[in-house]
Length: 262
Image (cartoon, rainbow, N blue to C red):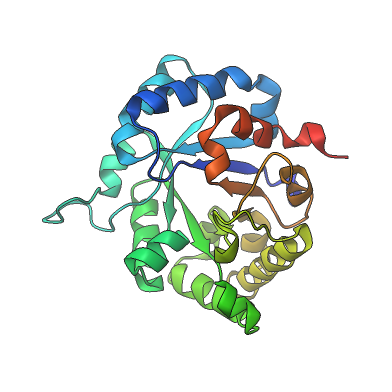
């Protein structure tokens, strides 16, 4: 288990993939591939598109599968004239447990600021769910030596106004933007350095207990082959998996990473 007995969380972000028939097949195959020991060692969540949530929820509940249902995004308001948006209370009614907020694609492609991410995180918490708050730098920022300051600003802004106990129960996902969907992966040492930096930032702003409790995921071309070494790092408490989570066999092998660790 990760340091300080933080139970790792392996999350599959399906992005804009899988219709609801494919989603049903994927969750069934994943449940078949995982065993009781896997769930005891690792928490697992899947984050289908909005159109798949009800279908996946039904399968999880009907078959009593110990996989948490997650969403990829949310609007910060509970209701209103926001055409095309989905509110946190709607997700909560579908028994969604985790909601990704501030994914780099939302920040880079849809212009979400730290203030928007902060509002979404607070809305998720108010609806009784747990946000997975994302942060990460571009290649240009990393090359310019700005990676740590970029992430520090995102952490401070995205978690602003939350108390220490709340922060300690959150999930933060570090995603080096240059490694998402590119086949490039931060080395385990690179990933550990930044995840350790994030934990230090949280300790400085919210205290030691919050830093000890918060789970920090790494996201960026995580695959079965590199998961064991990434997960061996002391400040990495899970993975936010993109492309490899679309295939139940690949994703199950990532969840089973403890079997492959030296």
